[in-house]
Amino acid sequence: MSDPITNPYAWRPTDLEAIRRALQMPATAPAVRAINDAMAQLEASYPDPIPSAKASLDAIALIDAALLAPPPPLDPDAPPQNAVVTKVSRKGAAIPIPEQLPTKKLDVIEYATDLLMEEVVTEYEIPSADQAAAASALAPAQQRRLHAQTILLILPSLP
Image (cartoon, rainbow, N blue to C red; front, top):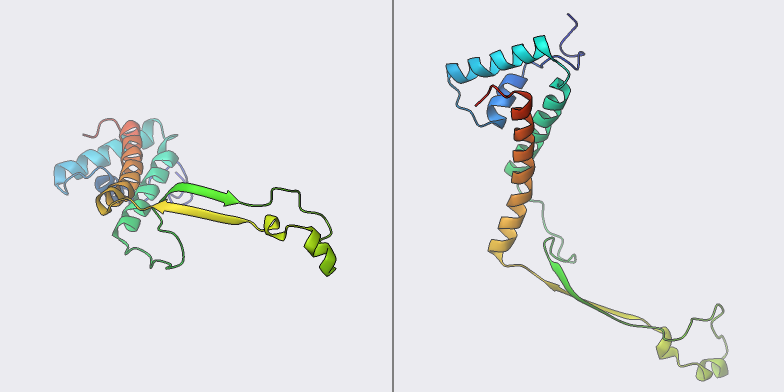
C-alpha cells in the first residue's frame, strides 16, 4: 500500500478526529470505534469517495475556524457589509457628451454645462442587529451542514 500522505484514496491520520468533530459525535470509545470501522471499511471496499470526504472535512475545518475568529475591523467609509440598497437615483447628462469639450468661453456659454454633470445618490437600509446576526450565522451554518451531510452519505453506517 502506498504512503497515506501522498495517496488521495487513503485517510489522513487526523481524519478520524475531524469526522468526529464534523458530525458532532461524542468523544467516547464506541463512537471512535464506529468512525474507525466505517473509515476502514470504505478504504478497503470502495476508496473513490475518500477525496471528497477529505475535501468536506477541510471545508468544515475552515468554516469552524472562521466562526471562531474575531470579525475584521470595519472600514468607516464603506457601506455596512450587510446593508441592502433600497434606492439608487441618477441625474446626469441628457444629451450625448461631445468627444471634444469646448475650450473657449463663448463655446461654454452655448452649452448647458450642468447637463454634463452626473449625480448619483444611493440609499442603504441597514437591517436590525437581530436580522444581521441571523443572516451572517446562517450561511456558514448551512455550508457546514451540507458538508456534514456529504460525509454522512459517504459513511452511511455512522449515526
